[in-house]
Image (tube, rainbow, N blue to C red; front, side, top):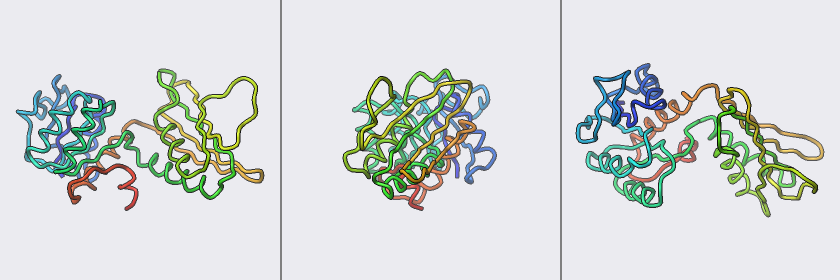
Amino acid sequence: MRILVVGLGGFMGREVAALAQSGCCGAELAGGVDPNGSREYPDLCVKTFDEAESRVDCVVDFSYHSDTAELVGFAKKHSLPLVIATTGQTEEELALIHEAAESIPVFFAANYSLGVALLVEMAKRTASLFPDADVEIVETHHNRKIDAPSGTALTLAREIASVRENANITTGRSGMGARRKGDIGVQSVRMGNIAGIHEVHVCTAYQTITLRHEAHSRALFAEGALTAAAWLLDRPAGLYDMKDLMRI
């Protein structure tokens, strides 16, 4: 599987390239696009899509959302499957992605961790089996992370809420007041150099079930993107995400 990495000069682009060169998921680095070039892969990286290698099997994007128009235009022009791992798209950019999915297969997800995807599915299943249990989500990240709660923690909360009646997502807890029935609590911890830990606690009066995922390296997102690329090769045009991949 020959891949073109968009954003090859960035941290995640380099992670994808390194895994591809190691043969992860049967991938091979065919080239990259980055307006700033690439110190690690100068001979394989071009600065514009007009110069980009089009004889590839899939495009993997870890660039910036502002590149969406050129990105989907390139993929559509050459009928290439597209994996988008960039976030923060505007409504107009999201519309371009949905339009592209009408003619090519597009995999679009905010988090490419296979472990997190599995955690979400397990958490939903557990919460649905214990409808009266208290549910608390605790996420821990390094002390430089500026947003809280994490996007993954909020995704967990929303997915759990989708299988519970009268669910109420609450972030943080302080002051006076008892826990309300139906609350899905989300707590954030910031310390040290922790890449990311997400825990889901499902607690009844008689037992507690704890599901936990710990990220050791951001390379896990590159691994997930290459897994998605390999999965996407045999798919028809359409918009896919981690839920589709988890149905394997």
